[in-house]
Length: 365
Image 1 (cartoon, rainbow, N blue to C red):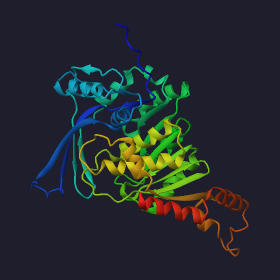
Image 2 (cartoon, rainbow, N blue to C red):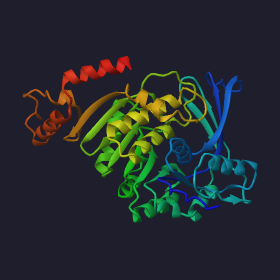
Image 3 (cartoon, rainbow, N blue to C red):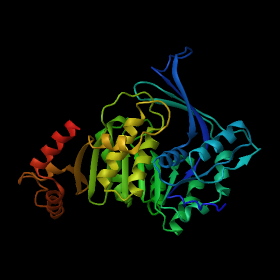
Image 4 (cartoon, rainbow, N blue to C red):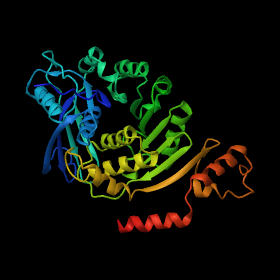
């Protein structure tokens, strides 16, 4: 019987592999007390693996290059789960350590508290991983927290083969030397304002400004329930997350990355991609675990996502409608860059009538 040739993965994730147990409860208990857990789910982490599984569920060929897992029940469970999800790549086993475990606790406010096992011995196994899957891929994903020394090898391999790199930088932008080092290797950079993701609007704009000025082609700043801001060349989109009832926020950031990667790999416009990513992450938090909603259902919610367009001129961000009506007395009104931006804004901004129709239609949908 002839064997069917496997399609090369369009997406390749590079990073930590670990099983995870996700516990959903109403609120975290006080110190030295307990709480009732409503649901327990299990999955494969970290973000690179989550994205691989998500994309595979959406019909995108995906692969994973991960750390070695222990030659034990948990390690073989990780390998079996990835295989069952259709994720390509060889899972390596070791007898040097037991498979690391992660436990996540999610409450109804959308917060999640995690406990993980990560050591240099485990992350060091990335240095001997086979990188051959990268060569024919369309996108490589790496996580900053897997360690600068370990992810650079994969990023440089992707660079050699002209494969775009998606870096989850989290709050790593606080280290200027790392930002400088990565900017020439990264195509898409996803970041947060701070480790706890509690920064407000000015913090978001500050991070966006920092990433743009470093030369990052596509900069994404996620702000949990407050949505995101994405900058790609002259196009700047601020998207607001739809209000949903949160049950489990574990993996929401990785689900956003999955949605963005899906749109990117399908050649969608930036707005379509951002809408889909926000909608996917919003739906994810409505139920425990990481089984994905189907594409059509995500696209339905994506149509309702509120979008605001902005321009970046003179090291400042402006909402497009306000930008078009800068008073003549304002010192920047006659600035050449500002005038150029106003022309661009007028070109891409829809007329008010069209905008009203879209709003009415979305309410009917």
